[in-house]
Amino acid sequence: MVAQSIRQQQALQLPALQEDLAIFDSTLVASDSLRQSTKTVHFIDKIEIQQDGKRLPKKQPKTNLPVELNTADTTLLKQLRGIGSGYANRIVRYRQKLGGFYSKQQLLEVYNFPYETYEKIENQLLVDTTYIQKLPINTLSIDELKRHPYIRYFQAKSLYENRVKRINKKYSGMDDIVVDRDVTPEFLRRIAPYLSFQ
Image 1 (cartoon, rainbow, N blue to C red):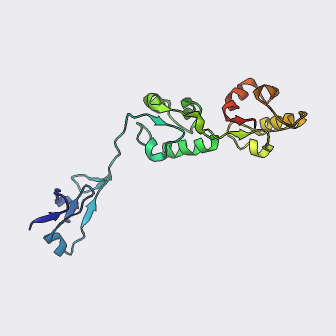
Image 2 (cartoon, rainbow, N blue to C red):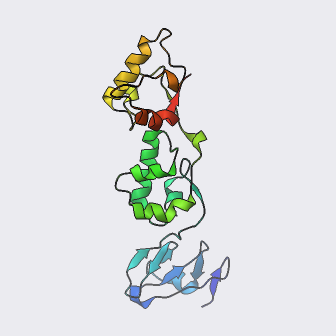
Image 3 (cartoon, rainbow, N blue to C red):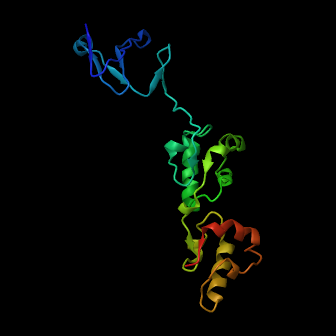
C-alpha cells in the first residue's frame, strides 16, 4: 500500500521489535496496512533502537556554544560536555543557594564536580554578575545571613552584632565591616559580590 504523509518520510520496519514501527521526525507517517492492523504502532521521536530491539534514549548533541552560568537552565547545561542531568541539577540548586555565580571557578564548589570536566568546558562558560541576588546586609537577621552557603553562624553573628553597634545601625560599605576572628579578609573577599548596603 502507498504510505500517506504530510511530508515524505521513511517508514522503517524493524524485525527485532516484531511490530510495525513508524519513525518520524515530528511528522506523522501512516500507511493503510498500519491503520488496519491491530498491532500497536509506535511513533518514535527521541529514541534510538539497537539491532537487538532494545531502546536507548537518544543523547542530546553536545555544543561548543558559550553558556552563561547565572541564566542557564538544566537543559542548556546538559549541552556541555561531561554535564548530565545530575550535575545540571546540582549546578542550578547551588546557584539558587548562592544567589548566582560571580566566577566560573565557583562551579568547582558544586558537590563532587570533577575538575577534569571543568577544564573541558571552562572556555565555554560565561558569568554575568548583574544576575546575582544581593543580600541586604543592613536588614537581615543572623538566621537570614547564615542561610547563604558562605556564611556560617559565627560569621553571621559577628556581622549582625557589629552592625547594630554602629551609630546609625547600618554598614555603608565593605570598609565599615569589622575584621575579627570570624570575619576574615578572605571571608569578606568571598562574600563581597553578594552584599548590598542599601
